[in-house]
Length: 84
Image (cartoon, rainbow, N blue to C red):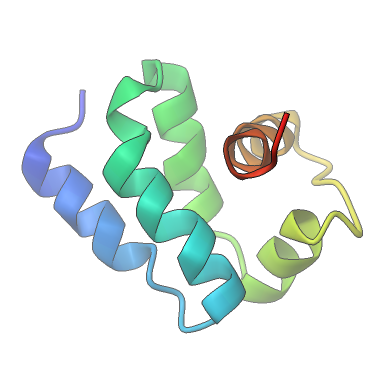
């Protein structure tokens, strides 16, 4: 269970300094993180530990993470921002 303090910390960590990632991560933490199940919340925290270069190619859909946990959270975030 993540506290509000934890979520504020995650929102800060979501500011990557790369605009393409910032516009995905910051709103996701602020608007969707709380509604994720605990496993997906943990996956998002794990995602934040990844290198920006890896994150960029995953979110530009040039590659898919080999780790199934990371692939799942990338898909969740992309589904949230892409029209159905």
